[in-house]
Image (tube, rainbow, N blue to C red; front, side, top):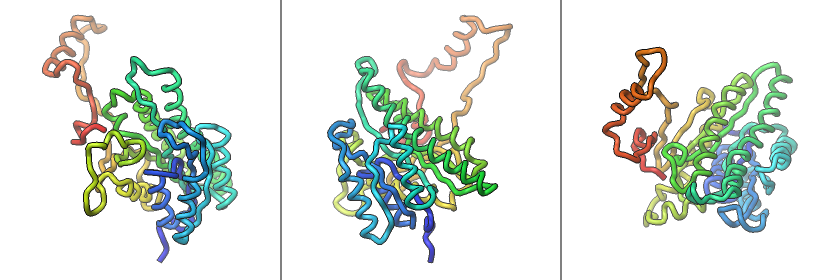
Length: 312
């Protein structure tokens, strides 16, 4: 019996540890040949010397299980290195079919004390890193489609976060980057649909090196799979990468612990029309003041209340 991703090739960035590792293993289990990308720096803030070790270990694990995989240790936030990553997949496997963007770092600080470099570095790795790989993959799919005279197979799965949905006080750089990734995803979905390519984003919740302090107070169960294990997220990525998900495009999905929630795009909660040519200060105060009169001062808007999820 054939596997869902048999004959397809994939790239997973940030795949040396945590979520990326679980995703790369899942894609390989479903039959895909995988390029395992990881810059290999030991610090979750992007500190330390780059190392081929993490990517090589995951690629070796895939090969040991009978799959096809190779490692790439370039920095996806570097435009040229991202291009080389996509080029490697095409050269090794003949084409690229699946791109999973997962690479990221954290440099947390409150907005009033964040340094410029702390902002720039997180935006660079998360948001620019996603753009870089998509840009080269998209060009590849467009060229293939033009040569074929019709749609080809292409899947993009990007990694956003609930920090974008509900905010995260100590992560203005991370929350902004993750929000930008959602915008990039929907734009990519619209631009590439005619070529046969889908693009979706996930907001995963998992216990990894990136979230070790967030979930520090939540112990792992003595038996069974940890509800926060990355293995709860990987099956959704495998499904979105598959032919079965052809109708899913431009979507945002929250996933963790055996739960998947589809997030709607923002909807208008209330609408007010001026009774004259243009709003005055007093008229705005009357309609908006009344609308928010029962809301406690300082309370923020967040989709997480709608989802029934706790913020992470």
